[in-house]
Length: 204
Ligand SMILES: [Cu+2]
Image 1 (tube, helix red, strand yellow):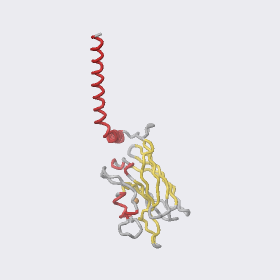
Image 2 (image 1 turned 90 degrees about the horizontal axis):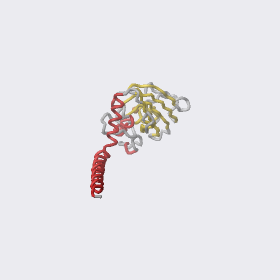
Image 3 (image 1 turned 180 degrees about the vertical axis):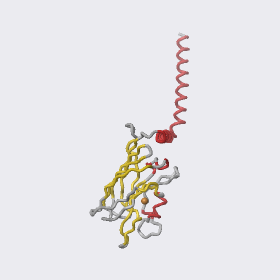
Image 4 (image 1 turned 120 degrees about the horizontal axis):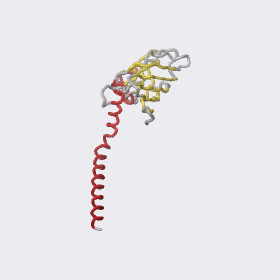
């Protein structure tokens, strides 16, 4: 009987040690789990040209343009395949379209709120939007010309640098509409956050 108790308490002690070790480990790891996963993810992206990720973008109007649309981006190693559909654009005019973002990893690009209109003219200019969406990272050329109905259906591939590969930190911005009777090719007319749809290999 004494032996049994000793064995049992030994077992309990070991279990307690294991448990506390486990708890410690979780406490240490949990807050950084996202970052760690991202680090692993980036390592995969750097090392594997076969990695495939899909992103979606819901483009919503800026400056009361009436423009909206959707885009999907397939990332394959250092290549992206961009499919973009938009409507409500100025018919028969060319529309610049870019991936905007910050190369500083700590800053995420966002679509500008109306308060971005610093000069109070009622419009968010290209420059007024920059503090929110950052500079152009990828020019989605050749810039499409909207058809007579104001629609664009666009597809092209681009090679991208490593800083752009965290695509979910970036936005897509479409440009170009008439302002006071003059076509302003730079003014932002739609914007959408790039969001991860899947991580490839069936992972979410
Ligand atoms: Cu742009």
